[in-house]
Image (cartoon, rainbow, N blue to C red; front, top):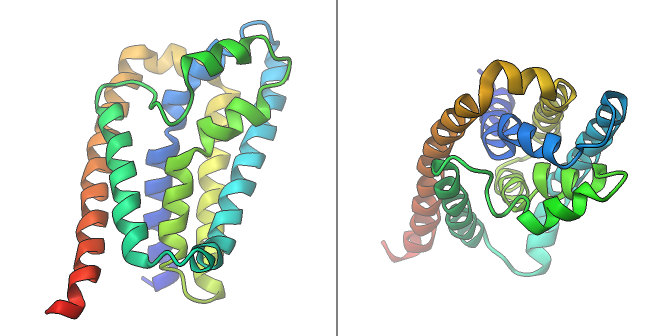
Amino acid sequence: MTAALELFLAFAVQLFIIVDPVAGVPVFLAITPDNSRDERVAMARRGSLVAFAVTALFILAGPALLGYFGIGPSAVRIGGGVLLFAIALEMLYGRVTGTETSQREERLAQKKEDISITPLAIPLLAGPGTITTALIFSGRAEGIPAHLALLLAAAAVFALGYLFLRQADTVLRVIGKLGMTVLTRILGLILAFLAVQYIVDGVRIVLAPLS
């Protein structure tokens, strides 16, 4: 297995856990109560495209952005790990995380004709967790093949997210709210392990010169 393929698989899995499109289905339905199915499909498509564009921006410009502010890889891993761990704890409670949409945002979204940009694309799909994951992996990518692998992984995740949102009614009926809660908790547990590993890796980088 090549390094680019390994990076693709690792990023795709972790990004899917963060985006968690299954848990986003009931939220999507809740903020589009008066929209027709065609309108929902159009908004899901635009939201997924915008979320991909935001993620791609941080994949490609992440290292330069971090370098401009003097943020090192250890800070990215430790800070990112802490944020992802906080998100994981929320997921373990079986609910949409506070970094995605607030109740106030959902109430305001119900009054909007088009929720594809906010709150669907940002922050529901491409929230702080998604951006943090993109920054962490962009720091690991070296060369065009690696960056292309990250972009393809992001495209695959948001394409899958679009399919879930497109068939939101069917997904909710088949999986049910209980099934979504169970799945969210399982993904939250996996994310918690990954977050702790990021923190450990960051601390290891800091302590390396001292050993």
